[in-house]
Image 1 (cartoon, rainbow, N blue to C red):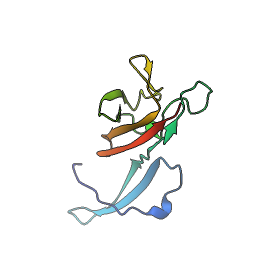
Image 2 (cartoon, rainbow, N blue to C red):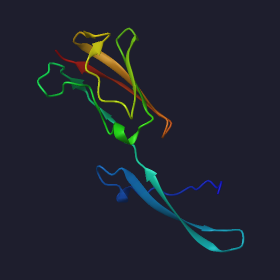
Image 3 (cartoon, rainbow, N blue to C red):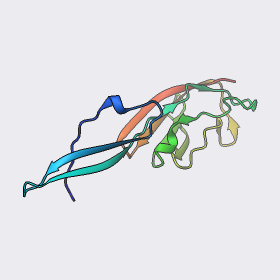
Image 4 (cartoon, rainbow, N blue to C red):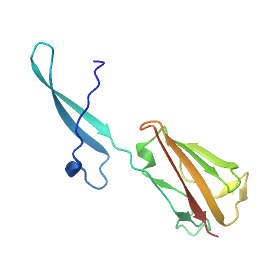
Length: 132
């Protein structure tokens, strides 16, 4: 309780699509007794779309972030080229951006995203293309 545990990550255990990493660490307490500590780390791997085509054909109609369900507390923000905030959402509620701002379709262009992930204290940023 209250102890910081440092462990060695073994990448040979990781497999594509894995969402949690189960680990164990051996500890010796102040009385010389050995204990095994088991814990699970939730892995967060986000992959934002590079483009989307909101033309209602059922394919790539929304800009999505693969894996966002593993970061329900994440903040997702989308900006235009002038740094105007067009869209924001929280990971648990994020259903994709449809390319609209105030009820109007945005023009074909590049847009920028920032994703703040409190679970890992990471910030992801980049851009994607809206194609019409």
